[in-house]
Amino acid sequence: MVKKSPLDPTGQGFRVNGSPSRRSVIKGVGAAAAVAPFALSAPAVLAADKTVRFLNAEPSVDSVRAMRFAAAQYEKETGIKVQMDSVPGGKAFEKLQASIQSGRPYDIATLSFVGDVLLLANEKKIVPLNSIISKYDWGPRILFPMQGDNYWYPYDYNLCWINYRKDLYAAKSLREPGNWDGMMGNLAALTGDGENQLRHGIVHPIGSNGAANYTAFGYMWANGVKLFDDDWNVVLDSPDILPKAAEYLDFMADLTQYMPPSPMQSDWANLVGDFQGGIISHTPGTGRLIDQMGLTMPEKAKQVSSFLFPSKDGKKFAVNHGYDGWVVLDTAMTDEALKFLEWFSDEHLINFLHSSPVHYQPTRLDIYEDPRWTSHPAFETFADILAMQKRVLNDPDVIIRSIDTEGPEPDVRAGKVFRSYALPEMIQDRVLNGTSATDSVRTAAEKIRKIIAA
Image (cartoon, rainbow, N blue to C red):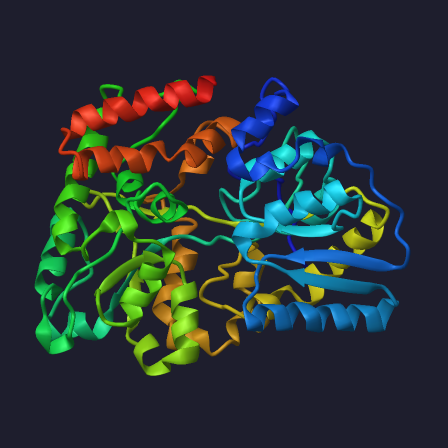
């Protein structure tokens, strides 16, 4: 029997503060929400047949195969067809908006940004999933209820940590770093190592892009930096936080000596390709890298392990938060879409998660104890990483944070900061422009105040 639990076990509510206007919400989520402003008011059309239209934003071959297998099984059992359309994750919200504008909205869709969920819920384009959510026991910082209603079903944590080569560590008798000095020492030991054809230690994108937002700030969260207090006041440059943020920027400046040239131009492809090609010995990212390597270079994949972003003093560690989930839209097929999602959750979710088992870290706590989940071969090959994933959910010394979930509750203000790239620009001021760390922090804090006031 599946345990029941409160909808928000961490107390991190997700509400529409002051019922923001449609204009302010659309501005808040940035460019992705700029698709035809009248799109949100387009009328839904009646379903011409018994087909649930599902916008899937997990386009890998194995994930699509798992989804289509479930859809075929559901049609066989119920007579309801589930049409799967797959797009890259970064295109999902744009595609969903276009479907609403056309008058044929998808019935279920994948989203990866709580600002997009907020936009659609505020416009009453998606429906609550309370009856499904309440059936399960959820991990921390993953449900985002809005005024008591849960509008999305999160299926993976998508956390960002540091991947590294165990064989290279063993050859140099290195240990996983417990603080920034240890990190620097390991990078120095493995940089310019001609025997293993490695020339650099790590890559951290610092350009104004999503890769920097996602992979560059783990050390900052570990060091105790916050952007807002409980009243949405910017505290980045406060007496308590500024020194910690400045330490982080100086550390990032020191890290660049162990990075490939031009970190401003580094992006997602470098995080994966440079590591697979032996150009770097460490890379920030998720388990997706490991799952991909398991398919194309399985022996090298076995040499990959991971550790968390350490703080300067080693007292705290962090992972950068990420997540993916499904929403159900208000359409003529809503009832059928809800039935399918609940059936899929009970019958086929684990099979879907197995399509990328290290990357798709479960959000439901009951799955961790399900023998179907732990039967996957990855639990033997990558036992250390999968054990770490489970541990971080309840370890008081591990911080789970991200730019877009900063603040007392998920809100368009954090979304604005995320889309503005104010924090990558803070790194650029210190690393590229030679601005002092404290001045770079103060400049970023002022930018954030103007962004959230707009």
